[in-house]
Image (tube, rainbow over all chains, first blue to last red; front, side, top):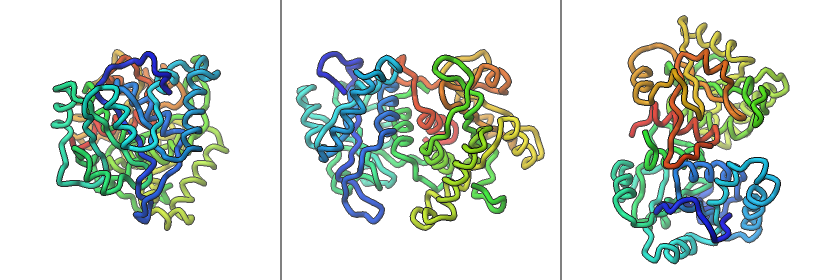
Length: 195
Length: 195
């Protein structure tokens, strides 16, 4: 978790993992629980692909405290000495109450509007290809926030309010039920990896 | 876990996650413990990218029993009804004692030699690019086994005996400490995704 001082990158791209509002299995809007490995895996991927911040978004106070404790363990506890690579990743973790709060934090930092890029397993009329999105990310200092949903994904309302929606990941079958951890890794690699 | 009957793909590509022999933090050769999310995330990625099998390799009997119980829960227990998508993924899971045993099983199935493709965070004199490997995978019915290490990675001996070694994943920084779950997702997408 950031202490507000030094950060390893000045990238214009951040990521947010939404725990609310997202769908559950029956398409009810819920708040999901934070998963320990979501913090670690996504922080490590965010660090590998040089992102500015990794926002863990939950309105639940006790969940925020949990995230804070895990992140601090690896930055200040014995975890920091045991595994400095983990420290470097978890430094990117920030906690936010809501998507609106996340965007506000970023806009305050950059001093300009942030564009939100939603992701999901379904197509959308606003869909943008990975090639086109990669060009947008590289072409300017426009700040972007990549948005991922936990549970059964981002709500239609969140998606409809985004500036862009990435096309779904297509593998080599009609099965597209990747974990959010896998989806983040693949999308960061498609948008920012050196192939 | 397979019952030996119907399988959803006739792909020539499988994956193995090695829990022994791998390095620990201090470069000692150890057997690591199976992680629940390694089963789920990698099975879902393997299914998405149309692989033939996902071998979980451990010589430890109690760990094999654990893998078997988790896989069966999602195929035959209430998990199968609760989440059929998870069932379709975990059907690909097979358990093996060793890398040699894994290769033997595959060679028996295909009736021909299997080529082993190692992965890792370091470069190697036998390194092959993702573009070249993708061409090899698509160009023939040669069976391939993609090999991933848990812990601090595959041993030098395993890597030196592989037929190919994939170049390390380069993100957008000099940090390359992805989780094995993220590395599997990215590599399958680079080799078999529709971009």
